[in-house]
Image (cartoon, rainbow, N blue to C red; front, top):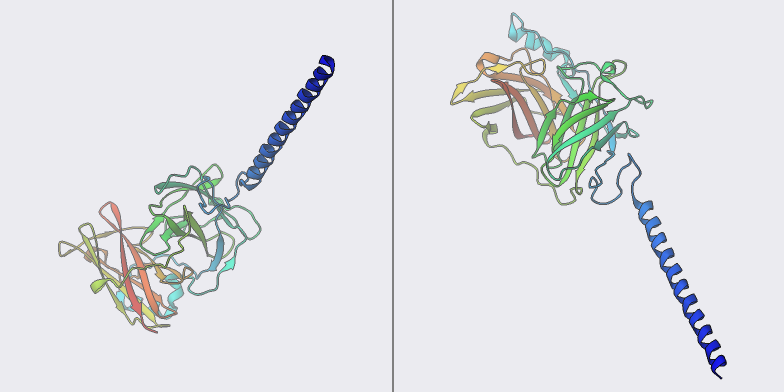
Length: 337
């Protein structure tokens, strides 16, 4: 009886061991499958994250559209007769003084600009590394781009609500373009890469830069600027817009003062000022314009010419060098049409 009982006990012990081993194997398989599932969801090196957090993995590939732009001319020379020269410039047409990509219908650029945040810093200064490619996929280096207004690339970063704006100057290092951008708020920003290739036409590439998550709520744009008057620190810029009608050439006159007295404008980006204009509600509405020869830097007067192709509310960011610093004056105004 004892031997029979002993055999039953041994058989029972072996069954328990088999069950335990089977359970362990099942657990190992479950953990292995979970690991494989996690790895399949992670972005590969150099690719964009598919998570809603966008850049939290430290890398980002931009969504790109391409916008055609007009010819960018060199700043006008100082004429003997400023009024006569101004009339001549008017007859030559607005394209000699502006880059316009207003309502052109953006077209997918197939990754012609790729951004990567080298080290993500939450809501702070971001080191952006990016490449710009031609239609054939060849990356643009400094020798492939013309210098326009002192820069190979004019890099504009603006928040989706047009409350934050930067004009940055990327440098070329280790085969890529590098720039520091201040992205202080959660949400969507737009980056405009404004270039003129040595071989090819000027082009403006727009891409999305997302901080933590895209802007999905209703956007509150800047309201009308009272008296078209913007104050930055102790300096004041007041805008006067002449002939502000759709499809008519308009002159934007900026009068800059400090303490009620005109300030002296110093040379900046090949002229005495630089203005970038967006139409609210259309991210592809982008214009940059340069000073006319009627600009009087000593009197704090800077004049620009452009054409508004649609009515609506516009926000213009005017940049001027006063002393040794560049100041940006945002002014929002309406164009009837």
